[in-house]
Image (cartoon, rainbow, N blue to C red; front, side, top):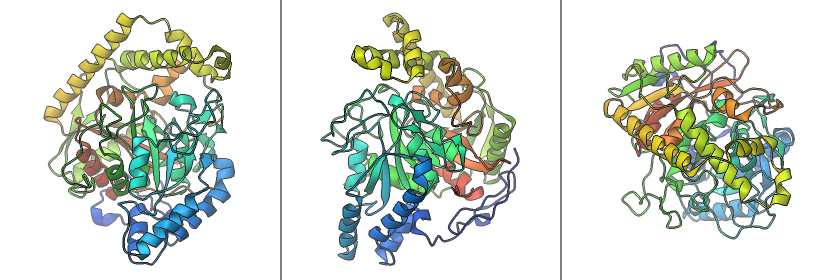
Length: 497
């Protein structure tokens, strides 16, 4: 993979060669002057010093939305009350009484999650247009922390695939190159993050749906440990899906996660809160680095996922950067069972159940690929499905054993850079582990935390990423390692035209 040096616009991160020997002092983020390009932490610092107001920040973001969203197509619906919410936040800051960790920070919500007052369409023409009355737990966490919700972002239909299109909203395009896909299923969140439509974006991930668009769009995307972020109502992929943050910086990711990772009694699998009335700030310890950590470079997940030459170079570059910061890095095999066989059953049965519980007169409105997978997998027996669940637990056991020796896994995140946005979805079962999610779905099965981190820009100007995974409930370690990589090799923001 060739990495390019860039002369980014003011406020953007500088591209640095991933293979070069860099120290934390070797990468600095220039101070942004446009609020739309600022991190959440920067905005909050300016609010506290009264050098910027939440209303000014929102207006800067909305100006970018007006300029670029007509072709990016990141939003399913905008929030007409966003300006009012920003004004209320401004009044709180002026009184010295901010509501929470995110007060006044522009944020978005994926349209698989409930946002009170808006319908949850899930990218489908089959869903009702009636507004829901209750926020999903992760959305409630953002609101309680004071975030200003810009709107709901697009998703592939019911989150079933990785290319960023759906029957209801059409194609969402990559701000780095409008001919390329943003990935999915958190397609609008990826596009909104890359286009600087606010610093914080809430996605969901059942097989890579946060990490894939994050990788294609040059963002940081976390699939947390299962249970860290409560879910309700449960979706089609409830036993492997998580909600998580998509941001432009690792520290913003941890900040947003701090607001979302709170117990909610609606979800029976929700983990208890960390000690303290305000819960845990996941930025604590994030600058501790990787010195002394054992990191296994993993190229097999029960099978050999495909990876192009640029992806192999990105993985090698990330390994070098972590080693140069004191990590003990070596190739390793977690000895997982063939995760394709397991995930294929989970994925297929979930889609078959979705179709079978839908009124027959609406089924013709579905994405043809979704209907195809449901038809192929709909005849699976209960014995076969329970066998897949037993294999999932075997995979989780193997991962736990691996982490007795290694603190972290380092893997590729996607087989290639973002592919064409307009290409049709053909043979979706094959595409799942050939083109879309071969590097990501294993960690949904094992339920351990995994994060996508941008590592470089290829010769075509498209971002590439790697993935870090840690033992179940060690979300703190993926943040630490991701932050170490971010310091060493930052890439510029997208520059939509």
